[in-house]
Image 1: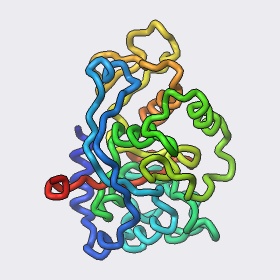
Image 2 (image 1 turned 45 degrees about the horizontal axis):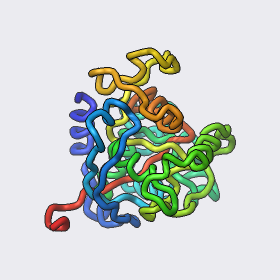
Image 3 (image 1 turned 90 degrees about the vertical axis):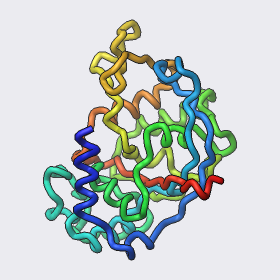
Length: 264
């Protein structure tokens, strides 16, 4: 909970002006539903309810993040507080205010910390998605709200995970999934709000290890669908990070909760 308190203090200190909030982006409404979790600890309690929310259709682009750091220079490379970013923060940019030539508009921003991503989402009147919200949308393919039982669909995702990062991510704008959201797979990994609530032990490959996965340090849980390695890989990646860390394949997108009056 210390992370949450620090983040709230951080965002309050670096409050965003109204013009930044008004810039906005394209969001799509994701209806309420349930997530049949592949984590046994969740599955034992039945499907997890997920409230309706709005999600950014595309990951945040380099151009959008450039606008953000120009308006809020405290988040520029070399200016951001070192407790909130690591040495790789925006290392692929030509200058603290400019991505490499030609990379600004079509590519997702990467090399950003959880703190920077959360601050950006706050500027849009939004927040990072929870792990359950992200997985709820990520379970969909182009025609089904949950395609995780399809071996061919899982194989396509795993094939992307197996490819070397190489020269960085490609352009945003892949095929829309069932909810109208794009690039949930095949482009970058993405931050979630509660990324460090999922812990994976180093010996998680042992099928008979009761401590394979730990959630919030509480009771042990296992992967319910052992062939759904993509989910386990996402958990392993996120649980290995600190909030100030950044990588060349990790970006983010934002979500907005739906006000009570909109639900009625």
